[in-house]
Length: 355
Ligand code: COI
Image (cartoon, rainbow, N blue to C red; front, side):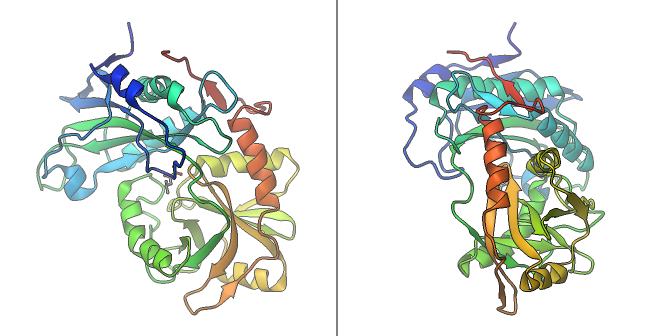
């Protein structure tokens, strides 16, 4: 018996789908989605459906109180007949940790995999196949109960939607250092992949984009001094030839790409440091030439070079190199993700196809 049901219209939705030439990131929706509901203390059976609007109570806690956590992972089919996923069990574990932090019922591993495999398998014939492209999977879990009482919902929904995508950023990034707003503080929900963290970042991100920057760089919520992450990406610096990245302090999202780069770098002989990194130290290091490169990473962004760090006082800091170590790491990571290189860490998982 299949691990999920398939609704009428799925095959027709896939047949009718045409992959556009230009994908962007999150602009093109895959024609199917997965949904399962939690009522009376247990999960119901999942269903694969044609992609479309869903019914949600206007008073649901997901809408009123941001009772929503999500994940992002990619399925690849570059030069392969079958799609593969990259470290999906890490996304499953992180979704469970995020759910635990917001006190939502964890999505069991079997249901999480039923959802991501159902969508990946159904979409395998329409997945983009060029290097750097992929099918981005967005699993999410939210409270559906209507009511303003400040407690968790008693009903929930787990869904997986998907998008054929290119990398989130193209070219080099110009980053705006955010000195006023705070994305997350220790003791809050920064380490959870919670929609509310992204909401907290949107004002500064929109303002940064309006000023011509690519993305905002977040500092800690207590002293506004230590680097946390970029909106939707973790950050690395090459200092005196060694790799440095902010340590996971409870307010930073523990990125799976971040973890993969740490493992890859160590295996390639790089010295790697996870530590508190003050923004002033980084900027002084760029001026003195000790910080030769700064780059970002994430599932959506892969490994994205940073050309400029712009401070709120108008000063701009340009590391001597823009895409040297970043490129090496991106090439090595992408080659494993796209299964063009041996999977030395056992990170990829092939998915059976329905067609
Ligand atoms: C991801 O990389 O999966 C994210 O959630 C980041 C977002 C900016 C797309």
